[in-house]
Length: 635
Ligand code: TSJ
Image (tube, rainbow, N blue to C red):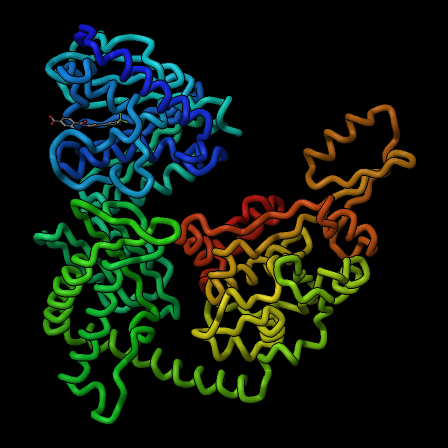
């Protein structure tokens, strides 16, 4: 049991700790980003990361995450158990230190790679501070220990509450509803993240148990990131086998899997210490240069490229490539705007050497796979040259110049992008209403006719040939392809305004796919919005209310329960007159819009693959599932 002998520093330190955790409660956003559902789930990742660290150190094989009926989340591991004996210096156990001292994670214990020392490793004390109640249970030395906390304060000492012939740690926490807007965990979010962690930690078994609905998921991937690539390519037409290398080097551990497919897109995800690095970094740079160099060397050596032909470019060898690059290192440096770019230069050289040597050998041993991969890249090179020619034509003819805005664009009079908005409106009739209803000072309207091209299966040269897309590209005024410059955008808000039906959802998805694939920075910079037109107009005598969902309709009808209501259901934007469209959907002081974000590139890609891939059945299902609830369509 914890030795609570006081020492002279104890009081002062205790106060400091309380100040630390009080600061977390005062400004939770500083520690977990937001207090919305994303922030809520951060608590889970924060706790799970500690168990993953124990697994990476080689002491833990199983992790169980439970979502309890009473609102708690618990995380169990079968590691060594957090030490509970009292430190001479602090008068506290390691357990209590981890759970009450800010940034205590990773400060004690042995080496090994740590997730929790990285990007979001704010420490489990933050979770403790933001939970009304947290219970820590540790199995160690034949005993079961327990300590309880409330909003970060210890409510009990570390007590022996039983015996155990196993070892491990269990943390059960109840997120504080004073802090979080919603305290209900989302199963899909939890399994998405834990599946990814299971791929990245070869040989670990992770179970997610949703006790609220009696659903259990188990993730165990012997193949590690090789299985991850297989999963990412599940709906694609793969070329050859998944190539896979894992190697310990002085700089750390390197694990890479890759496979080409007939897709035109690149899907490469990189991680450092299990932390997703969407901005890439040194590991990705090393991978890319080795890939380009090795493919070109192989092609020269085996005379697949003629002497007078140019080398394949880095872009060419990326088309149709799916790869997962996962490195683990002792002292990861995360850089960039979102601190999600690996800065350690030693990893560039290490990955370049390890991966280059591997791929060289693989190609020599698998000549038919090597030739097939080369053929795919060579096709990309030819398409690139064709696209360049097409783009040159477009530029030469001045079609992309700001001077020749498309005829159907009703532009706004302001030239200040920070206040200007572009509405992409489905169909000419709704476009007409929008043109009349808008504030022409700062709102521009671009009606889009028919179905725009499905960009998932097309290349830049074909995409630019599509009239609807070309109009949009010119209206945006920021160029296209390599020359695209997000800072040149003529509007700071681009609003997708489509009908609340299946066709509307389809057009919206096509537009989002276009942005995601070819103008991703526009989404990343937060410029894309989805308009929220009302579903019903309710009139109670002279009082008119617009409502945006069936629930809101019911609530409003109850609110006016003595009055008789006339109910109009809007089937499309075209049924609203210009004034109504302005009042309900376009007026900045009254409207509500969804901003589109990219939470997780992989989830987005999975969604897009479902929507845009060649398989029809899952696509239909997805679109229908989302036609009613637009709010779920953030990508
Ligand atoms: F931090 C935490 F409380 F959130 C937490 C920690 C949550 C969970 C689910 C697991 C853990 C955790 C910590 N699992 N395993 C460990 N291991 C240690 O803390 C540990 C054990 C033994 C030794 C040693 O040197 O003997 C060192 C460490 C770091």
